[in-house]
Image (cartoon, rainbow, N blue to C red):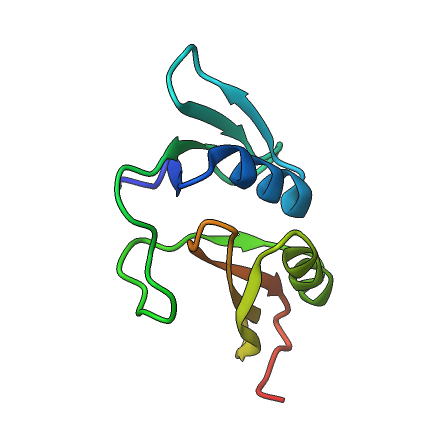
Length: 128
């Protein structure tokens, strides 16, 4: 069965995006030759690595529906993770919400207008 093996983040200001994701998640970035492309290492263990590329068109418009694949990151502490997002210049679009029997999820926006999810696993999660 095919599984996701790579993701890409599109950024109007790649250096700003590198700073954001390094600050919030501790990811490491390595520029790939002279191309405007950075390889992203998200760490060891389960998960995938990705890339960051200079955006080739306009950034997503403010307050529009998600119209692309959206990635969700596993975090140990959702409240702390959303705090880091805001401190790094991002926004929390949809705060903490229960996914019963799975965990707590929030949706955020990075400094480039991209939307992503944060999920804190908790089998006991239930609507507050």
